[in-house]
Amino acid sequence: MLTFVPRTAGETGSTETIVFLHGGNVAGWMWGQQIPAFPEYRVLVPDLPGFGASNQVEWRSIEETADELATLLPDAAHIVGLSLGSSVALHLAARHPRKVASLFLASAQVAPPARRDVLIGRLMLLLWNQRSFWTTQARSYGLTGDDAELFVTTGLGIKRETARAILEEVALGIPSVLLESVTAPTIAVAGGADSAAIVRASLHRVAAGIRGSLVATAPALHHQWNIENVELFNDSLRAWLVGREVAAGLTDAI
Image (cartoon, rainbow, N blue to C red):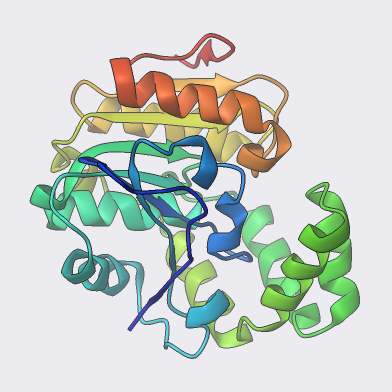
């Protein structure tokens, strides 16, 4: 059974639900600046299998993770995913459409990553259990203090086998047939300084594959842009939830 991160804002009177799905190498804590920003919604933040408080739950696949979430989530939730979380969100929307009212995909790896990036990922696995690796990663994300220590602690709790399985699965990309089966309103936003496979190829695939979807970039930002620019991320999500709009501050990606 997956563990859900306690939220810090009240749920009284909430009639709509937001589900935040975290990226790889982190856990549900990464949404700490988003959880209190949406007090009018019921907010659910699971730690995915193999991560955070769910690190003893075996990771099987993106598909099976989506299926497990479908048994735990209410119908018609707004799904927000970053990176790995976006992949899970797309599978959830395709396989369990009643569960998804809308999709907000951040830093989605829809196109297969470049071969060089896959090779770098495999090399990183050699350092996986070393604290110095995680402290370096924390600095690259701009994390400091308690946030950095939490990142290091939860990172060391992720099994190398989990990371390897996810890397090999993500390297395949998201099949076009799956994208074409998504019917929920969808927006995909990438950090403008992220990899070309995400900024160009992945956004193009979303736009081409999901009917009526919107795509945009967050200028000069990187992969973990919900932490890098909290205000822009929260404004972008709110513009989508309230008006199905691309927020001011984002730029057209196509």
